[in-house]
Amino acid sequence: MSGRTSGDVILDLQNISLRFGGVKALTDISFNVREHEIRAIIGPNGAGKSSMLNVINGVYHPQEGRIVFHGEERRKMEPHKAAAQGIARTFQNIALFKGMSVLDNIMTGRITKMHASFLEQAIHFGRARREELEHRQKVEEVIDFLEIQHIRKTPVGRLPYGLQKRVELARALAAEPTMLLLDEPMAGMNVEEKQDMCRFILDVNDQFGTTIVLIEHDMGVVMDISDRVVVLDYGKKIGDGTPDEVRSNPEVISAYLGVSH
Image 1 (cartoon, rainbow, N blue to C red):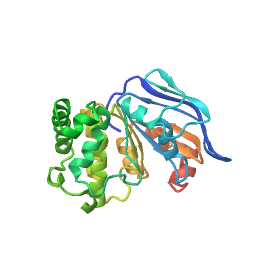
Image 2: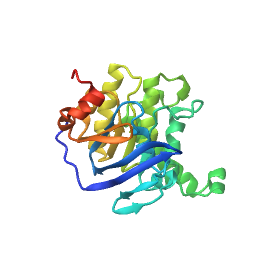
Image 3: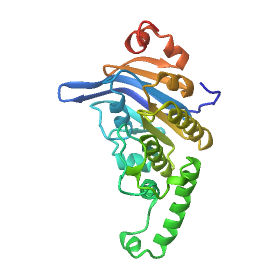
Image 4: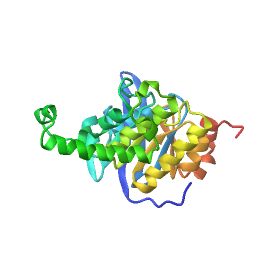
């Protein structure tokens, strides 16, 4: 864990329960996220980790519990409203436009920042032209930051998996989020690609001040870059604390790390 300092609580999840028919995905889960921290959610497959991210950005609406974001309670949050409030998301399965270039994919991350009318955009006039120049400049900054200048015009479908994951991160960053939700950002990567992604996540957190909530299965990565870790198992919370506290929690050891650890 780094020596970064975290701020006040900006997201507070209180007694969250989520059901699909008779199946309980999440049961009475409470934890919070502080400004500028890297907050990891870990647990075995089927523990409810992605469901929790979907609750945070409004894809799922819990049947019980309270969500307080920046001091305001959210009973039901829609994904587009979450995006407008500064929450961006990457997905476990890459959700990019494979036939479009890297640049055009990242530009789609600016949609919530666009104010020109459809007609203005269609004729590329006035405000639409000024907006596009501003958005293009921001996208180029993200491209430089993530060191993908050499593939900016390449169709995403032609890229290796690790670079596609980096493009998806770029699209999320183009929205200038205050909170970034990363769902297994290093899944399927080799060691070198994981090292690069770790560096970018730490740089995003440090240089942009972005609060990051991430799901990750690589325990070495989680312990190295996280400020605090919440552990889920079968939809229930079984641990919450610093990496060292979680690592020494007997319930976490038996459920996730294995007793041999």
